[in-house]
Length: 479
Image (cartoon, rainbow, N blue to C red; front, side, top):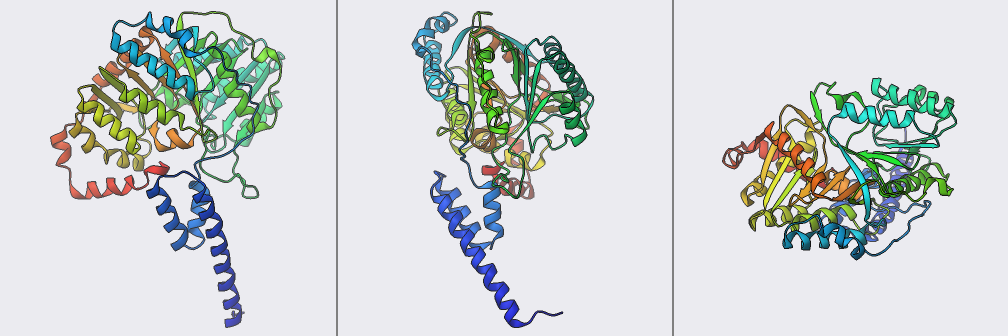
């Protein structure tokens, strides 16, 4: 049965009305956001000139802020100045004292959790040891296990964690498992049912559901946290999966994780509690989850969460302040390097004023399009004096930055717009010479296995490659 002209006219009119309505709603939403002018103009053009599809793409990728209700159990403690003696005691130059104090004051205001002292930090460079220690902590849990991961593979490593969680639940331990609905896409329904049948409480972060408002691809939970009995915790860059042991086509995976004990664990517990309350609707209540922790060491550490539910772009400001405040050297490892324009400028100006700025990125990337975008920034950075190395034996997944050999930031954020402005991330700011030295040692060992990018050779690359890279760079805001 053919459709006559009146029917076609009705369909076209309905489509036009839908397009205009979506465009008006989305452009109004866009005007309420504090985006940079080029991004705003780009979205307006897409919404206006790509009927309906432009609006759908904007709904999926365009928003960079969200409101969420969570169990806000944050407490402000004494001001940062009370920790200055502990930090100054670890420093050996006036310049470093000033730099550390400035970073401390900034992060004390940016993060809802203040810096705390008397912590113990273990740097885990071997992922076999990382997984073994986490599983051992779950196996010895007495009251609760809280596990939160962006990616959790149902492979042999995932099976080991499943067994440990189910066995802990069978002993009467409260076990909660939170995963990101997009990052954990590989988790099968059978795997999740086995957890639930075993007594493990499971929740997804923003599941994709076309019947609700939760169908945005942005706002992923990129955090990796394990808290056991509120007394010990793990956090860092490694997800759960065999690839972190080098069992993948890409070869060796290099990553970095932390084993924490002391007062900072309570703050990681609060980060988990907020995420769990948002995802499950079940707030954690009870002092036994947030009991005051005894001194475990002598390290000053601050838990720094960030996300699109905060008014301030915490990670972006933290990276910017740390880089621009460096006096001697900046060392940065990241698997995905697509810097914002302010951070690119910060890296270049810091190098131009004589600070030794070094960056290690993967030579082979799991996301080729991101790698092309990353390459588009090389020329500007190399010309300014920034040293860039590409890790060639496999995939570099470690996410860490050290400043002047005295301060370090380790956690989940990559140096790209998605981590710095869109994802829920968490990092540890560590004010300690010894821990920073251990991370610098990892940097040096990784640099020795990497190839330095030569500026003269890089500038001579062909036109087709430059076009491809600059085209990928256009999508930097959503990479």
